[in-house]
Structure formats: C-alpha cells, structure tokens
Length: 377
Image (cartoon, rainbow, N blue to C red):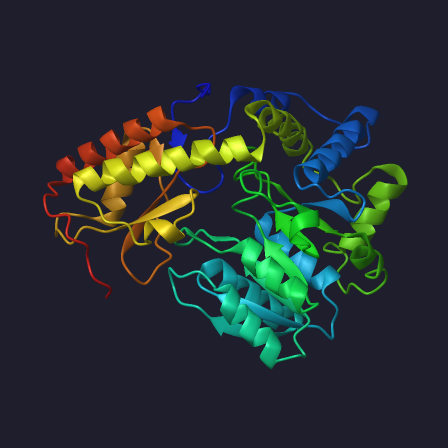
C-alpha cells in the first residue's frame, strides 16, 4: 500500500489508516451550497449505490454523524411505530440496536446469541415462524466488539422467505463485503466511510428501498434525524438540510475511486483476508490465542486473549504500542480479557508484520513470557 504522510498506523476498526490521496481534498475549503460541492455529493451518492448494486429500487441518504447515529436515524425514520423487530444480540453493537429501540419506543424481541458467536439462520427462521407479529430483523453484519461475522446471505434469504424486512448494520463491513441490494433484498442498510471504505469519520449513509423512504413522509418525530426530509431535500436541489462535513464528503469521493481502482469490494476483501491470516499466524507464533475460531472470524478486527502473565498490563501495552507508532483500542468490550487488532484500512501484509514485531517488542519490554490466556473475572 501507498505509505501515508504520518508514521502512525491505526490498528482499530475505525477510524482507519487512509491514503494520501484520500486526505488531499481535506486540505482545501468547500462551500456547502457551492455547485462544485453539490456535484461531489451527487457523485458520492451515485457511487455508494453502485457499490451495492442498488439500481432504482434503493436510494442513498447521507447524514451528518457517526454510524450509531445513522442506525438510530434509520430505525426512527424508516421502521414504522407499530413494527416489531427481532434483534439477534451477540455483542456491544447489537445491544446498541436494542437500546435504540427501547429509547425511541420501537417494540423488539432480543434473541440472545452469546458473545463471540454468530446468529444462525436456523434460529432466525424459527423465531420468525414462531412469532408472526415480527415485521423486521435487525442484524449486525460484523460485531466488531469481538470480530465475529454474521452469515448475512443466509439470514437475508430466511427473512425474504418469510416476507419480513431486513435492516443491516454494515458499519464495519461496507466496502469490502458483498452488499448487493438486489441479491440480499434488504430494506435498509446503514454504514459509514471510516471503516472498509478507508475514508474519514463524520457522516453515515443509509441505503433504503425507495418506497420505504417515501412512506416515512411526515412520520418522523425528530428534526435532525429525519431521513425522509434529508432525502427529499437532496432530490430537490442536491443540498444537505444542515451544514454538512464538506471535507469528509470530498474525501469519500476520492476513497470510492480508490476502491474501484483496487478492483472493487472483492479485491479489497482479499487484501483484508490476507492481513487477517498473516496477523493470526504471526501472533500464534508468539503464543497468542484468538477469542474467535477462524471459521467465525471476520477479516475486520481480531480479538486476542490477554496473557495470564502478571507482567501483562493492558494500559501499559497500549502505551507501548503507541510509542512504536501503532494505535490499538485502549478499552475492552468483552467479558473475557482481550485486546483487539484491526486488519482493515490502507494497510497491507508488510504493515501487519511490522505491527506484530512491535507487539513482540512491547511484550518483552513488559517482561511477559507466559502467553497462556487469562480467564474471565
């Protein structure tokens, strides 16, 4: 990969390391109502729909704010008040969907899957057959708190067979995985630029069926999160309702061109898979154990079990990595003691091997010799 201006590598699942070309549009000022910027917004919307093969069935609605804001806006705007959602819960982000439903007054049924496990299509099938009042299924494609990947294609087929609607949280996967709207048939998909699209944080986007968006007219109780109004404004004059993150949009425009130049989502996924395989293999040589079995491990972020060695100090480990030019998450999201290393962003196999050497050096500096996994408290 092209080396970026800074020497720091972000080994976190968003924001990610980006290329110089992606950063370049952020070095100038953009007028949010200027014709040039309106053209950028249109290009970005068109390119995002092309990545997902939306055709004319789905529309693209960008919104100021992070992925969680986008998910909340999608549920609040596009899931009717009398709907009932099935939410398979297997980590922080699926739990967040349940919390959003609670706060905004959407009825939901939590299907407990368990930390580090993926929801099974058979379980979703059974739940939909048992409870015919369920209208929607909300699935997190990659639960990046652990790195587990949900079988999106299988679940989408089940939801479609039952005649229900599917909402996909693709925040951690869009840009590297296949999210073909025609093949998967989802009603709503939400994502962000700052993960597999290798762009900047600051906005989310929703791909939704046109009729679903049209039906939301005048029904949304929030002003700022009204996706119908946002869409209608953009369809009318190309403008955002409120001040957009102009530099972020411009950077995304370039990032989408870089995705196409790489060969599209399939080629990007291959690079991430290679990053994952090298990371797991090299960490295994040091003695580290992964939390998730390889069959369930997405090439997005890998959770490694903390060493039981008393010399291992989680905070000290993060600081040691930062001194060596690598940023990892400074907090845990699992009951079992783990740390996470991402393999997405504008990084390649060479970056991964260098990162593992930095991990090895940091461990030696701390005096860690026993890599037997620590147990849950």
